[in-house]
Image (tube, rainbow, N blue to C red; front, side):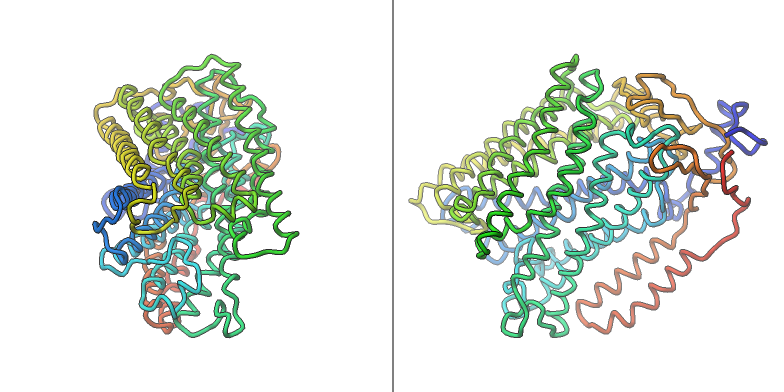
Length: 638
């Protein structure tokens, strides 16, 4: 591209003059209305992250309540009805309101920066997704506070969750909340996919895409294919409960096992939807702190894609105890064990990167090492549970609780905390305290092992999941007490981490643009990035562009008086088109509010769907109503 006039970011427009013009074009409107109507991916990403961590704290408090109840036998601290709500809310909050949304949130913030563009694709849809996610989470927690929280587990198996065995509105609220979060997740998946495929910086071919971005591309495609399954399932459950359909009633030609098939077709890929972004974090952190490019880039990309494909072929291993044909046992056992192969490839590549590099054991890398140790233990117990005879013996025991916490906390939360510490300077412009960071890591690592390793033995001794208490004399007392002490230590570690982050917002050392000397394009932007991310769109020259040239070369020619993006070709990353980016508006918020009103009302009457549809349609029409751009965009780049 080449500059044509003073309205383009040509080489003659630099320094304060360039920043002032871009800032005027890209900054959001002032005031509360401007905050609500913002479409800046960084602002929405920060809201997502903060909200997800609030839900993490709430879900963590519920976990501590459960551990307090189970610390000693015959405890009457929590009654059975409230305990059922607590473990259901804990699982639902962690899976639907924290684990998946926080990975989406990190991607919403980081992916546009990592691929070198100025905003995410479909920025209004991005704002809409956050408001629907927030509405679903708030709805669920208000219901819990009013003692009408769901109580059938985060998976809501029928017939337990059906109208006969769960009367009232508890399961209806759960089903609608799931719909909210799935809408949000699907919206983010579409945005991320489009951003990665069409908005990469010039020169960033698919062979140069950062590994975290590759992970998010695979995850986004997995979400697009798996989330409709659970959205359909929750809709069918709500129809059974509110309008008398019989999808899951075996006495009326329905099938209760259909629920499990549809739910786990989403539910098992969800584990990898959570794990793969974490694997992307690990690849970026290991590369930076080992001071060498990640070993086996192509192998890791193939492993990410392979994991995404295999994840859809093993949902039935959650259903071994329901009875299956012999061939089904064999196939799903083989698929469940096979998924350990791509995971193992990635782990060997990370270890080889550290081994061959010059590692600096800063806090982010410590979280990664803790992840590798913990995730390997979780992976080994996963291979055990993939064996049908062992699974039948340990099904629904605390061994399974130990396994999935090793996989989900070790495999996702540890890398996530490392990623927060790693990108905190980019988010805020300040460094987190290394001393407090290392203290929180070691306390979390030890506390986690003390909390969850004894659960393996509790499961082998026969302690079932989801029991609110147990009698003395079964040999479970000491192990439960040790587990509860470990949970308290783990919670204290997370509290230290959060306090470190909060205090560092004001007192942390000022970070430059690239305090870790990292190689990715996101570190070419200022810390924190301005509303337009980059003064000029950078060019990617390799997989580690800032290690080749810092600052990187740039292209010119985008307008500075309108929000414009560069679109590139899918494979080679060659400049293709200039595209306007959507202006801020309140219509995504209004659309989300209208949709919330309809969904909440439909819990009480199916007529709410008919009454609530016109306002939603009106809001969407206003949202998409065409407006004349100030200047017609040119279709091609010379």
